[in-house]
Amino acid sequence: MSSSHQPVSRRTWLQSTLAAAGGWSVLSSQTLSAGDGRPPVTSPRATSGDVAFEPNWDERLTVTVGPKEAQLVGTDDKVIQAAVDYVARLGGGTVQLLPGTYRLRNAVWMASHVRLQGAGAETILIKEPSVRTKIAADSDWYDQEITLSDASGFKVGDGICIQGKNAHSNAALVIKRTLVARSGKRFKLDRPLRENVWKLADASVVSSFPMVTGEHIHDFAIENLALDGNRANNELLDGNHAGCIFLQDCRNIVLNKVDAHHYHGDGISWQICHDVQAIDCISREHSGLGLHPGSGSQRPLMRGNRLENNDIGIFFCWGVKFGLAENNLCLGNRGSGISIGHRDTDNIVRNNEVRGSGKVGILFRPERGEGFSGDRNLIEKNTVIDSGADDGIAIDVQGYTTACRLEGNVLKETRAPMQRVGVRFGEHVGQIDLAGNSLAGFGKEIVDLRKA
Image 1 (cartoon, helix red, strand yellow):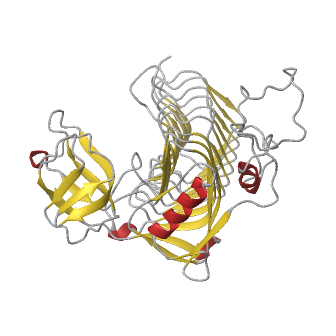
Image 2 (cartoon, one colour):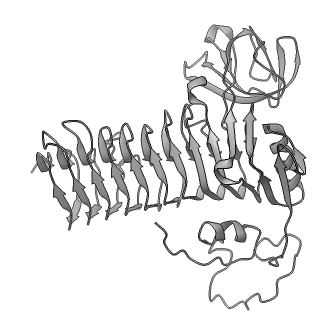
């Protein structure tokens, strides 16, 4: 499932990380424009403030973490976080997690220019079971503390999520924080609440958090480790807030050979994150989504991943554009293998195998009406096999979707034809070009509900 990538065009710390994922340039064309008349940089030096060029150093900072014989010895989130923070303070490098089982009571927070690297399946991060309790005293939006009804399952240093309703709008309340000090049942938080947390809004606290996370950072990597979300012993925290990996407002990220499994929520989710590469990862057996390129994320690259037994395999959220999903295996996902919707435009979905989806192989969601659809997408050379129940659909194009092309796809049913459909077009669907697709084994190959 490998494919050639563009060569890396700048010598930064990230060069070695990206090389492991096949090589890809993170340099903006606005930073270095080819042929703009400036002389090429042939012998770069480390110069203050210059992030475009740096020498390709023979050795960079690496800090080892492990249960024994490591520079930092331990097996919890605190020792991993200490290593990340140390490496970040010195400008970047690698945190090497040695073989072992690490138990997390809080998220590991990534930092810019840091690579978190394990030893494959021998490096396992496990989320501890969650506990929940009610809020015992009101806290206002400017407060930086909460009081719990039962604090017996909570410790200083724990990651928590405060949940309830907004007392004014009745909207869902979700606040992720860390407990940093306590007196009995009263805890100080790492940051102010910025929301009213009141008993009348049925507020409660649960020890839920993403396992590895980052916000407003850039140029980092997570590689070669296993993340066990301990789904059976944890409450749901959906993919807009958490996952085995959850990223928010980040850019230039490599996720390489990560095995994320059993999270009560999403496996790997990124929201408003640009130039994310998910390469050769496994995301399986989550209650939520396998890969969740989230709202506004530009240019995601998802290649060679295995998305198995999730709610949806690959979920293009809102406004995901100019992305490539290629050579992925979507197997046995309960809803659709691949889902595209709200203003997800100009993407390529190519050479994927989508097998045994619970409802639809590839779905274009209906969304809210004209102007909200996933347009100008290319669905090319995918294999879609055995989708849904007796009335399952291999490719279902709904809503006002238009200007898409389905080309060279192999759609098959190996079960009885029943009422199964190869491709269905909803009544408001616009122009969809079909070319060179192969359909076999369906009750009806094409169902077109569009009005003449």
